[in-house]
Image (cartoon, rainbow, N blue to C red; front, side, top):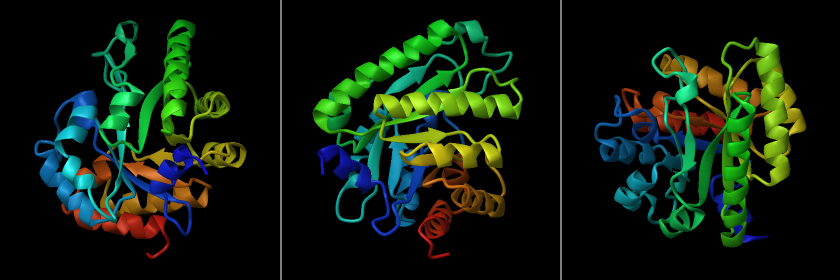
Length: 262
């Protein structure tokens, strides 16, 4: 077993291989919001719920390193890239203005204690932009391999106006290439049940489904169960945890759903 395998397993339940990851990189990507004004306070509560990992920016990871100390602490995942526009495409973020660059090297993330790094891939935007995403991914993968650091990739749909069938096809195509290049896991947006079922049937690396917009707590639990039933190996929930009335309790409940105790 390689160092990369060992680090990936830190983000998985030992009995079931499933993962419950909390995303808390929102201030870095889209600015401060509920649950992130005092991120340290919020994540101190989240950690009591026992997530397998927490996704942070490099700066937050360094400031909050104490949350990842000791037995039973969550694994640290660091986002290594940055978009020059919000993830939600709209009239206030003209598509032609979007750019992407690597902001953190594999070596810097490793030195900060990361168990993995994560980057976006924007599929179906423009050929030039997609090639830039592929090239950055190849560079980071090469450096991660040298360090034994897993790379997690988050493919997004570059054309939100596509119908669900076309979105599923584009997402599956991107995931095939990402898996072929050597990524260790995927953090994917949910399109619909048939799409997720087809993707998890074909892709062999772990597929983790992101949580998206904040919803009622009961619906968040229902979504998590549904994703697992369709073959997902875990979830990456952000706002539905860090913006919950009781982040620790919500995290604990989601951990129970993921690992079969609820």
